[in-house]
Length: 128
Image 1 (tube, rainbow, N blue to C red):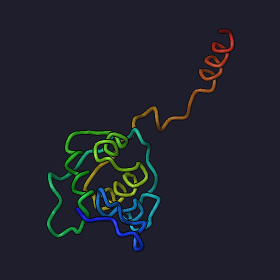
Image 2 (image 1 turned 90 degrees about the vertical axis):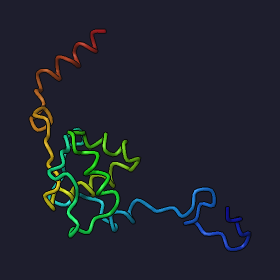
Image 3 (image 1 turned 180 degrees about the vertical axis):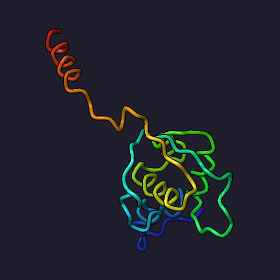
């Protein structure tokens, strides 16, 4: 185990865990997914069993494809891989652009909310 130098400590080094990789390093500084946004409860499904050898992807891309062989929600992917949701959204955008995954949004997420139902809920809560 390396000892912590007193005068040459670096912010990017965690002496207990090793080098720390910032989330934006995994996404090359990108913060929005390519190909547009998607709902966090959308289901991710891999379209290929494993990434082709000719495609240059990061280990996180491989882990997403492995996790998404059966339908899994975007937030579950983030939890499963222990990554922030922002990083996962960008990586999923990469995979979607490459045609390696499909995203299926639930119908309720794509339809606007019924204002009458929302008003009835608010009125019911006020009556309590």
